Length: 436
Image (cartoon, rainbow, N blue to C red; front, top):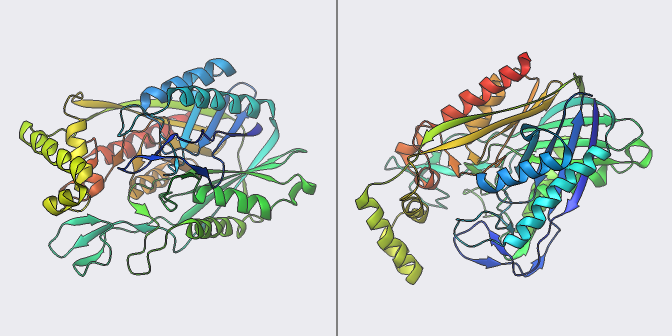
């Protein structure tokens, strides 16, 4: 196998809208540059590329433009282009139709930069072998859905005396793929799963994924006789986890983001010298489209949602007093958003891999147990679930979550059963590709 790497700056100009919350934010500074990272690989017959972007998410319509443009420009199949977003909440708004308008001029620039990054990665390809390892990053990821004494579920309830406990446990597994190249810097692909929602504010920042990359590259700068290591971060199934430990002081901001990056980087370093070789003989890729029902409301529910949304727009304080439901705005926006949408959605599930390593793309924010389910049932030695990959259609809660409530289920575009369908179809795709 041959493998190559490229990194390009994708930081937008000041004034660009920042995505991630319900309030409009416009960028007025840069904490660190936003970047696109591409890894290309070829077995001599097939060539594919995986890209990680410091962006919150890109909807299907824009992602189709990206993948088709990159495929055409680089003479590779559409299915061989895999683009995942880290889901940073301090990056630009890309997708039209969300809460606030995007910048079409920046989008065109970004789409070209992604294609260019793949081109550079292909040009950088060298003979390579593959090694893997796993470790754990403890104490930085917390399930954000909590059971309350009345049996309901609340998202990020804070220090509420009615909290019984978290619903589930975080996946603290760190996965490492080390691509060892001849006479060139190695490539380290890191996979963990937690929301990059630590920074806030109006300055562009890659959040903790950027600190993972920079910490590791600094620590490994002397590798390969000074050639060093290129680090790429792919976020996993993070839809129901974040950085908030409600039993401790609420940690947030730049220092805590850096801490999270160091913890993940430390987990990688603890196993970096003890990786296990795996097959790297062939490149595979594929895509399946599944149709899932939309979580639309009744006419009465939509009418009430419009009244409450108008109240929020006029007076957010009065809105919170009126609703008395944590995170109610997510459900309100979902009812309004889906009013004139189709009754079902086609979701793109994609896999790209080399040898005994496979990337499993999920087009939105999958719950932790989706990632666990795919990793457990996949026939590949290492399976890397990726959130916000080749599309973004919101949250994918597990079946029971819809009856329990909470922000994620209330705002999800889909009805109960979507998570289980994602697991089943993704696993089926990995098995088909393994058997090729």
